[in-house]
Image (cartoon, rainbow, N blue to C red; front, side):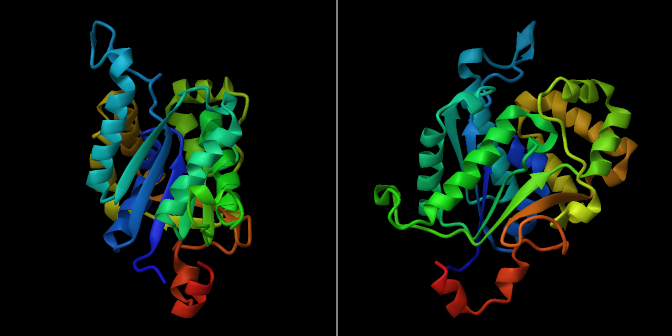
Length: 278
């Protein structure tokens, strides 16, 4: 049996781990869980700062965002952050086999017990998020097949997988106070699903670590407009940022019973049972 537990995230952009599930990651890192984050792009098509006084050139933006993620990860207590260089904004157009191979290699090297990835609607419809979730699920499946590309490492079975989603009341709150973002969501091909409470598989209370999440968000200097908007939203509707919610991909895919601990089912297993599933 591995000790301690290992949690992995497979997401799309260098700020997804922090803005999306940062509270959850901090919570488990504090408990001694080894938390590793895999980012499939460097977010190199993002904001560069005021056009009159850019923070960084376009050519250097990707490397800067990867460094921001590393610093944010340090603030959250992550064991590692990894940024691949697939094209920001065009992840869905990249060969799935290529991306999946890289994820399988990462999974077999770090051997997470639990994996978090994007939900089927990518949180709010972002095509990179949707693609990241799809590629992650395929890689998780293949990583556990012993005969599948042994050169990528010894096979590894992820024990539980959760998909990060935006709760229906959260999306409603954002629409109410941020019309610009609400309008942006309407331009995307995939619209956010209505993730009501009865459809959720897990909800992690982050109230005790939310200030540390904000501190980690501030490591993403190139995302300043976004984190300022996030902080302003929290001031208007404080309850919006009290938890991070997930649907369960496996086992027992879907929603209820609502879990409050992503490792709850594993904590009750004997060392022998865990070892047999490795």
